[in-house]
Image (cartoon, each protein chain N blue to C red):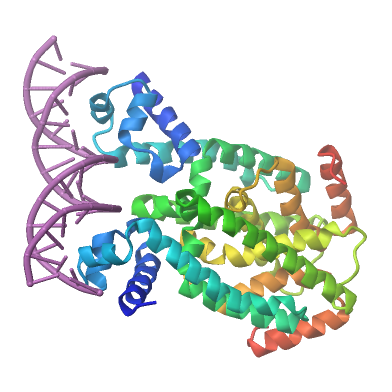
Amino acid sequence: MNKTKKKIIETTIQLFNESGFANVKLPLIANTASISLGNLTYHFKKKEDLILSIYQLFQEELALITKDYEVLSDFGGMNLQLRDFYNFQQRFRFFYLDLLEIERAFPAIAEKHHQHIEGQISGLEKSFVHNMSIDNLVPQESPRIYKHLAQQFWMCTVFWLMQLAVRGKEGTIEEMTESAWMLVYPYATEKGRNNFKEIFNTEKIG
Amino acid sequence: MNKTKKKIIETTIQLFNESGFANVKLPLIANTASISLGNLTYHFKKKEDLILSIYQLFQEELALITKDYEVLSDFGGMNLQLRDFYNFQQRFRFFYLDLLEIERAFPAIAEKHHQHIEGQISGLEKSFVHNMSIDNLVPQESPRIYKHLAQQFWMCTVFWLMQLAVRGKEGTIEEMTESAWMLVYPYATEKGRNNFKEIFNTEKIG
DNA sequence: GTCTATAGAGTGATAGAC
DNA sequence: GTCTATCACTCTATAGAC
């Protein structure tokens, strides 16, 4: 990809993160990237082309992170993945704040992203079942418990930035991981809880 | 309030719910309400005036529901409140889907709503502490546990419609209440769990 | 109070010179 | 590839007749 195109994409991501998806117009992008509006539309004939390019980048970088999820991990491993995901969210912050708006405006993105979400949740469920098999989580009568837990873990992590935003608050990565693991803690075995201690000690959290 | 003003407000809420906050323009509101654009702007000089009137209505109707929260209840009582809240969310659906967008566009709303949120979360915490005192919840070493639980309960219920929307799914009130109570269940005493049985039997959920 | 008509500001996209 | 200039359209808000 050519240099100007890259500059446009990175500038747009930055502006989306700063001002929100809806508030970023083409003239602003051009000015911020120090190119003319005409040049901007030369590289991306339609605004939608630019958005789709950004979503593609989003997908590619997300794939680099989530490929690790294929390998089933214990809580320590899952926590490292979670921290990677948090940093990824910071880079594409706007996506986690304006997701619904983006899905509504671009049905092609919506469709792809729906699949991604269901994959993420079922991946979490597999991880929890795995941790049950290695005696980190207590076996449950109903298998629906870990389906629910996966969904709650997903909600907590994916809407974390949004709940901070609508409350007008700032937050830390430790608060996010703590909230997420708090969901899991009640289901953990003695062995699993020792696993948690290592995680939380590392993060200097009680 | 005069009849046309009321019609405009209800029409706008309906359109917001159908099409999303950002996609509703003044001409659409006027057409749907079967009045002229000039008449619409006669009743609401600025678009912002209309939005603020709707938020005021939102607050008033929400106050009618949340005044019950003052009285500390057991899980059964909290579940009735939760069901009321779900129905309220349906009426002001757009607000729970486009909350951040609305807060960004109208800082006056943001400020009021931040206070409302913190009140809601601390109210939930009080309810959980109350249920601990009446032996429905197990006392915890750290009081932070029920602070966390309140926050998770709040997130689960307030972002419920949004998580369905971004996943492209439909949902039922029972799925929402089940998810919320699943968060509480691990902390419940024997007595508290019997309390749950009544709730879930009523709703015909396993 | 309600209407029609239109001003005024912006927004995405195009045309054509260099 | 990059620029300036401008079109075509949308949207909010106002003016003035009835």
